[in-house]
Image 1 (cartoon, each protein chain N blue to C red):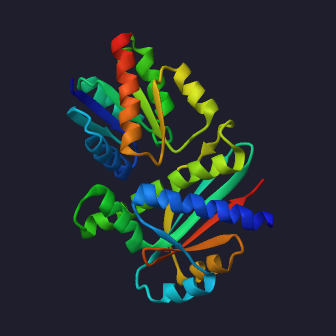
Image 2: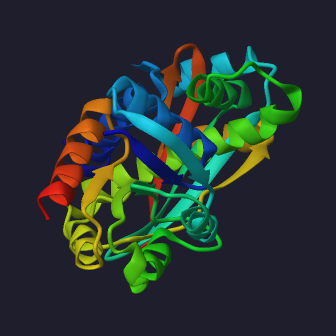
Image 3: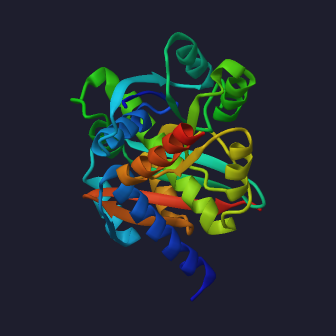
Length: 129
Length: 159
């Protein structure tokens, strides 16, 4: 199975590092879409079939938390798997995000192995659910 | 060990680890005297990034380095050729992301993994040689050499 992945991060550098990590981790990729903030992320979700979203929290215009809330308010998007990649490492923040429906959390800086492990966990949960 | 010395030691560890993982660059410890000489050898502008954090501790993190170094980080990450138009924004983007990653690690060092912090959007600006010298003299700044580039890193705890 290959995935259509959406990367939502205001840093072009980070989006590029995630793409490199996905390739190094040999994740089967169908398509990669990019967005620089939550609002652009929602547009991409509306326009494309996405399987997995990697999102940052701290972004201008619309942050990652607002975007996640809007995604899960829409029942048609309940299938969407979201992994947060953030500089923040607070356990309380991770708990809050998981309560909102986020399934994976990776703190920056990260390794390709961490990306691979988290995708395996998140997409496996998706299959068994 | 004196508190500030111990904190500087831990901040230096964080800085080195993040540079390795994020930028694939290696850090050497140095002294402020050495750094003072090094910076005069660079014709490059100095760029500075600042970022605030607010939680049960409030403070500011800043980093200053030659713009060529920020550009090198950005170019390496993006895998692109240097392009004059893209240069400034690429360097700014790279430095903003670097300080963002550093800030995430620093707040864990200061407060552990439990509390939630509000992190500001990082800001960058070009600084003068005088401002660099001021930062160099600042007791809180920590000097590094990263792949020949002089770097100053500073944590200021406000409350």
